[in-house]
Every structure is written in C-alpha cells, then in structure tokens.
Length: 170
Image 1 (cartoon, rainbow, N blue to C red):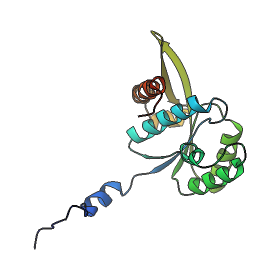
Image 2: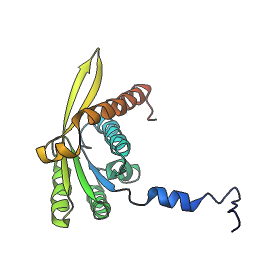
Image 3: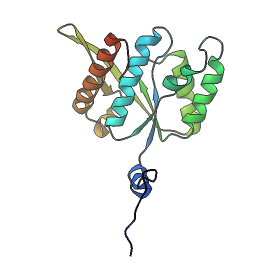
C-alpha cells in the first residue's frame, strides 16, 4: 500500500478526526452580566479548566457578545445559546446561578442533559486572587477530585488575571 502524502493544505485529517472523536461537549455556564469584563475572564478560566479536563468547552457568553448587544439582543443570544446547549453532553454551572444561568439550567433539565454544579471559591494569596473549583454534589466528587480541579483552575485563573492586568486576553 502506498504511503499517504499530503500537500501543505491537506493535514492528516484521519489523525485529527480520530483524536476528536469521542470528546464530550461541555456547556459552560457562569455569570456574565454585571462586571462583564471580569466575568469574561472568569469564563475563560472555566473554559480552560474544562479543556484541561479533556473535554470541549462550549461557552456561549464568550461567543455571542462579540456580535450581539447584551442590552438589546439578549433574548436572541439566549435562544442561540440554547441551540448550542442541545448539542452538548453535559451542562456545568460555575458559581451561584444568575437569571440567565437559571434559564440554561431549566433548559438542560428539560432536554435531559446531565448537569454538574460547581462551587467556586475565591482565595487570596499574597495579593493574588486564585480560584477554587469543586463539585457541589457528593456523587460528582467521586468523578472529579477537588485537588486536581483546584490546581488546574488556579493555573487558568492566574493566566486570566495576568491577561486582565495586561489589558488583553491570551
């Protein structure tokens, strides 16, 4: 059998497809309105955390505010987000539920999508803020270890804080 040869514009699609197959899509839900700048950086930290856990993060509130106005097109953004939710394998909620998160949570229940709530704690060490993420339910704690989450979340939030202080996300 002849070896596969690819030109510069033909990556090894078989390898990419095999790598991507089976990765679960995780809908990331967290606060957005209010302090949108800070909440955006926190959402990026949560997305990084989900990615580091081996899943694909779906974070609508990082996507839709890029082209929809929160004040005048909020309903359209929520409708689009729920379309993405329908494609996801699980719904993960980070922190206390806001009005928008409650809508997403109720939709996930109606769609039969398993949900995993996370408790988010903010810790201060030497003037630097860190993030602690632990599953809220005991049954989820068997699946996820808080120590692993906290370590990954701390790294993600450190990166987000560094980008926030620098004025640009990385």
